[in-house]
Amino acid sequence: MSIKNAYLQRVYESVEKRNAGEKEFLQAVYEVLESLEPVIEQHPEYEAAGLLERLVEPERVITFRVPWVDDNGKVQVNRGYRVQFNSAIGPYKGGLRFAPNVYMGIIKFLGFEQIFKNSLTGLPIGGGKGGSDFDPNGKSDAEVMRFCQSFMTELYRHIGANTDVPAGDLGVGAREIGYLFGQYKRLKDVYEGVLTGKGIPYGGLNGRTEATGYGIVFFAREMLKRFGEELKGKEVVVSGFGNVSWGTVQKLNQLGAKVITISGPDGYIYDPDGVTAGEKEDYLLELRASGKNICAPYAEKFPNAKFFPGEKPWGVKADLYIPCATQNEIGMEEAKAMVAAGCKFLCEGSNMPTTNEAVAFLRDNGVVIGPAKAANAGGVACSCIEMGQNAGHTVFAPDQVYAQLESIMVNIHDSAAAAAEKYGFGYNLVAGANIAGFEKIASAMMAQGIV
Ligand code: 2IT
Image 1: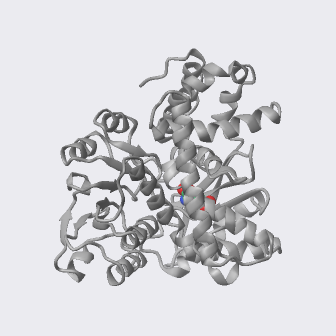
Image 2: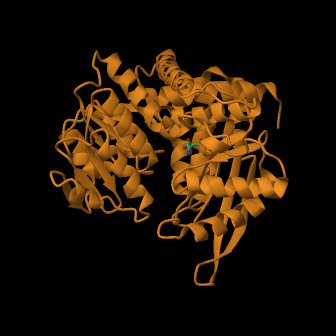
Image 3: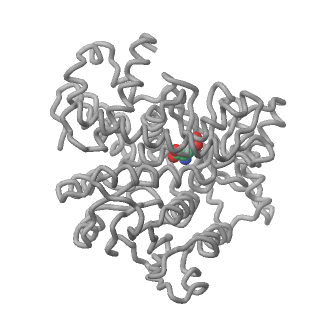
């Protein structure tokens, strides 16, 4: 596919010009605009209202210096970001990513995706994202605390429970959220749900930690159902070993599937016995807590498993593939390996794991794709439930949360499928998710005038 509509072309060209070098952001925008062609053709009023020109321009972009002192007494300086992309349907909402490769192009791509993802949940949350090029791996707790306190010392003036509510993403888990929350409360002297993914004793939501992974598996289940198949007995290739992988593995095990791989930046693990419930699932948490960002030790702990250094798991034969590591982990080479291995279903866990070229190639080869902005929306959906819990000064029970999550994921799947069908895309969930997410944002923006 390519963009043929003149209005969409003009918008994309101007995004390219204005955001030169931000390749992940350009990729995310291109993918969405491409799907919107039939919608734009039916709604000439959008062009008259400059709707897309406004949609691709963040409402506010904040960058700031984050100075901190390491354990050797040396001064370090990182760069902090918050992109407040779109508040048409609710306060800005989206995670913070701490990773050395973070720059504006990554934060903007994540913020842009978040607009549609949050809209798809059906809940009142706008799109935003933030982070830093700080690398928490290998840092002491004290260093992470000093960094988080310095980061919040600038960020606090831009956020609030009804303005902008950050959460975690890569490199930001319960520990970081705790330090960030403590500093916000100290600076602002208000106890409010300004961050989600908090610890349970101080306002966190039962089930939030596993929500992203559980939601992905519910979404995959709905995809399989379309083809009269079920998860029970299926072999699954999963990448990554962090929070998203962990939740995904857990729910897959509960539903009777078998996870045969995990991966890290150092290579991948093939476990013919499956990454089973109990000790093996728990070991993923240990790997992550080690702060080394490697998966190789899994094969030492469980000797039946084999470690493939420097390789990715995409050539391993399986019934279902669920990338849970990071953006663009599946390019053309990996997509070809997947097709050669007989891949039929790809359900994206990580944000934008597949390049646009690879998505087209997989689709042309009959692979059914569940796009990340739909499939991984269970995390942010539960974040919004956490916001509601905090605003209502109450506590929700785990079963209540799980039930709501499951019905949200089924709804997301069904509304993406219906939108694709309505605009002549068949069962193309990539296009359907973009359109269903967009429709709600577009009507809210139209109603609110030129802002
Ligand atoms: O990519 C994502 O949706 C997240 N990192 C979670 C965002 C959130 O606000 O819970």
